[in-house]
Length: 639
Image 1 (tube, rainbow, N blue to C red):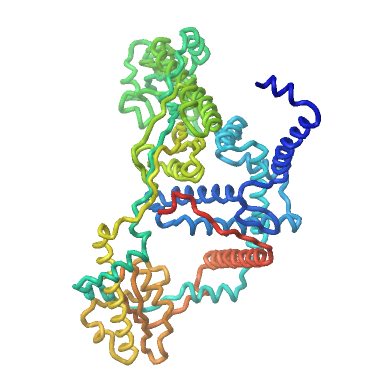
Image 2 (tube, one colour):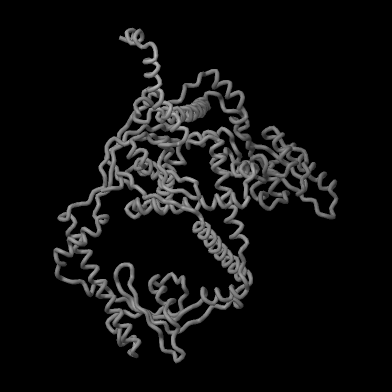
């Protein structure tokens, strides 16, 4: 049939067909060059674009940072996706405004500064110094080329220049320090009492309409979390079978590193010390030592001579015994003589800074290399471990490439590398057990690219302290859903009762404060409550509830006639509180230690610098032409 088409496709008709077919291809190609149909843009800042992919990456990075910072306390329900995306986009807009403003002001980052930042980064170092292979491997695993990373780093360093210029140039005057100290170091004499909400808990259940309304108004409180089942490939250096090292390599390594297998020589020794007085005749002392040696050579017992003649108070009573001695401990001249002696031989008089010694070596340990057979297994394990680590890094790079090239399956990579595709049980967003307790894995599993688009994850190293790498993908996904009303009715009833009790407790506290301000005494008004009087407290008093401190330091000063001021409020748990402020003592900068006052000045200058920078940045954002588009939330976030 193709031959028939070829024979008939001649003349102007054929050319017309070719032209008609070529037009859409040409336009499609032009469209790709012009950027039409490119990835969605969520915001523009003075014409500079923030894409949806960039936003997604930053949202995932923020989630990972929150997980790492909060650890077991991390609760994804507290970081609702739409709200988090909005906050991250706000930050990205401010960062872009800062970057563009820095460019406009002529600020730049030199190649030397970029190089210095890379050299100082611990992740790129081996044994405390920059390692080029480590640098390239880390970037490769993170999906960066060196050029792309260095440009990203340059942008980051540039963004900090204006911030440092503003924050580090701020200063605080003496008057400002005095005023700040007066307020921040102020102390207040207080008393307070809690009004427990438990005393106001209603007995009757709330009406059905209230239960229904609460359920409809708070669906996020009754969600069953999203969960997934995963397939994954785990690469573990400990599980990689090391290549068997041949005998010749082991023996060659043993000979090359023979000094490592020599046990340090230790000697058991004893000595006789004759000290040389500052104004004494050294030759006389030396002659006396020679006489003692002659006695020992003639048959006298070394230990008995030492007990009778040695002037070393630490060893004379023990017959001069010094025990087992390692190299590097004794006086150099003493050590040289002792380690040159044969066993049971007595040295000639040896001069040290302490005087003259006679030394006898009674035993020798070590000093010889361990036989090859004794260290063979150790060498085999060490060399095999090195082979396993090399294989791990090679396999990790191949795994990253293969799973990227086939993003819709782990099987091609597993077959090519002879690795196992494993599966997990159902795992919720806050993680599971073992490997899936690692926040990095769960962040990847619930990312848009893996969960929504259906791609394999990037290569993830979940634990920086272990040589492990994981690539995962989602097999099954159950989105978050709201539990039925019947299932959560008891929770709602308890919540509504607690709300009613808290409202009643707060109303009671407000009424009590009104009576106090009318002139009644605290003892009379709070007769049925426990009144606590911590006395003078500071703003950061550890043994006073934060709500009490907030009320105490926001209440007016007591009247000049000594009448206390009062305030009421609610504790986070629902109890109400009343506070009486009886006296105020302002802080004094003059009474502070000069070093403390200087530290206070620097802190105040830092705070003012940060406020100044934020004000400048707010103004730059207000002046910039910012266009935002409505944000969408990935399907994994919708119930």
